[in-house]
Image 1 (cartoon, rainbow, N blue to C red):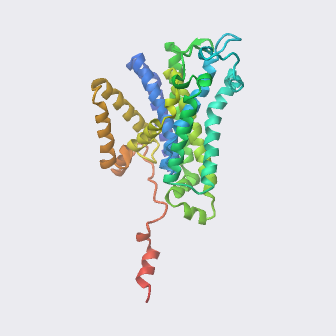
Image 2 (spheres, rainbow, N blue to C red; image 1 turned 135 degrees about the vertical axis):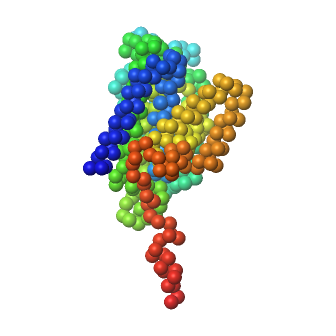
Image 3 (tube, rainbow, N blue to C red; image 1 turned 180 degrees about the vertical axis):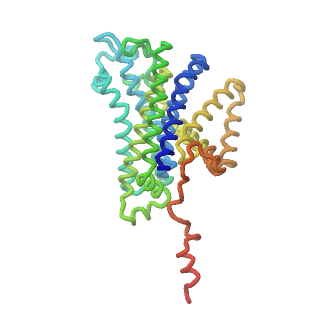
Amino acid sequence: MRKRGGLLIEVGVVVTIALSLIIIMPVVLSEFRLNLLGRFLALAIAALGIDLIWGYTGLLSLGHGIFFGLGGYAIAMYLKLQVPTGELPDFMGLYGVTELPAFWQPFYSFPLTIAAVVLIPGLLAGLLGYLVFRNRLKGVYFSILTQAGTIVFFNFFNGQQKLFNGTNGLIDFTTLFGATVSDTKTQFVFYTLTVVFLAATYGICRWLTSGRFGRLLIAIRDDESRVRFSGYDPTDFKVLVFGVSGAIAGIAGAFYTIQSGSVSPRAMDIAFSIEMVIWVAVGGRATLIGAIVGTLLVNYARTFLSEQFAEIWLFFQGALFLIVVTVLPDGIVGWLRSQNFSLFKRRQEIATYPALEEDPEVQHERQNIGN
């Protein structure tokens, strides 16, 4: 009964925050600032996916920009095809393309585009995860492989002028369902959908990290070998959670693209993927809410500092990261929880198993060995 009551409180808080963002923020913020908030909330969706695999499963991905970028390109391709019948996207004419490439054809359909936004990043993440996890690669090796993947995809999209407009990426979206993409009302709809999907993504991640499945993810993070010896195959669970995380990043990329008005290979740059990890680290790993808080805090700090101190703002940003890492290694939300403060008053997760030095059986064996 108490658990159900805590769940209802959490749902109520999430719904209240979402409604506040939708109803109050448009009144308080200017059109530019509201659009900026919408972009940051889209980035927070991607951060939730990072927290799911890194905070709870112990998989440090340095290549999530791949999935973010693929989701952005998928929705951008649909928007670029909103042209009169028989015409091609404007950039193709600059490179002498006379016929629409075959793989662009499905993006005439909005349902297929939405499916592509979710499935292409999700399936790619699942496939990559399967190839890596079945060989029991983890830790730094997994991180290096995901980072190498960003180099491959960045160079591919950067070099395809005829297919994706190369370095410039896909820009200048005009209409969607007859409405002007850049219109204030249209952008408000995008903003509202971003808030709704952020709340839904939080709910999905909370559901996945709760109960037996969530405890299994934590067990994989803390000691994968013991999980395997207990009769579970960690590979299947890691592939699943990595695929879900990739799909979440794809959705985030799509929402960011329609609000920023462009997508380019920079979304697949190594630096951007590392930034995602920093957002989660600042907010607090294995907290979910910390991923959102960290994303908003870091991005707003960067915006404020770059506006006020254009020449030296990077030094302030670097100092912020150093302070968090050295003083708050568990992140902001993690520190608040250590002070017995919790927004939803949830029961704290316990360690998967005691450290060997604290295990009573191990201590007993050491005391009686040789006796």
